[in-house]
Length: 311
Image 1: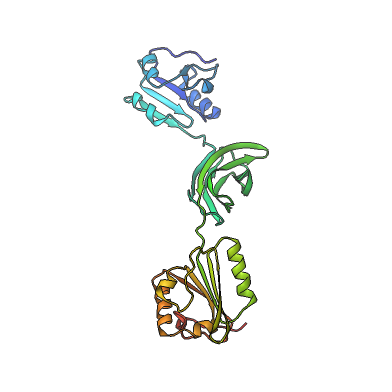
Image 2: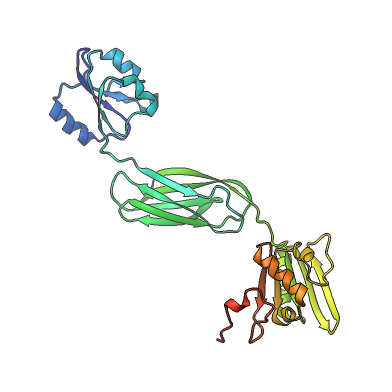
């Protein structure tokens, strides 16, 4: 046990969490073995029977009225406890690094089904390999090994359920957990795209695409040419389907993307082409062209900027 400090002591040592015994021994060898040593333990769980304890920094002044210099070892004092020591010379000896995640950044509201990442840095107090793991939805989803125990990391996961969730970052050495930190998120349900499919003739590809999108609750409208002047329309997940006649600004406003083939695009008149170009230009609609022809139709918005290359 360490001796209690004399009230007239002008220098003392204060131990905080994470202090190094080697640093303490070296400091006492320099200051002298009679230097009083106290432990800062605001809670009973951080106290130790072998060292006198201060519960708060205000008690230091009352117990040691002659104190002029305080050597603080470890990770230091909470910011709220420092003002009570104004006037004292504080000397920090924080040479024992704290094990933990120095920083971490992630998207707090990821989208369901889209890749999500958390990245940051980690440092262990002692050198040696450390495994970092991302836990989500009840299991470890990604991991990375830091050979020296410190460094940056990037972990990935694709959320499969909407709503609030508590992921976690965990660091382990061998089978021992070093630290575990919560990663709260709120997964947003993806907004399904409204898709307009326009085909000059029936095709397996567009039929498959239609069924795939509809099975995932995307609103889909399909217009397929059967013969000259005759078309077939189909609507899925669209409670109030529009008329699929001419391509107008009002019709395009009902959809986020148009998927069509070269023959259909080439059949558009001037007004339809202008409406499609305007929707693409102002960002209210997208266009996907099925590359089923050796040349690009002149009606393709921005088509002059690129061409087709045979493979």
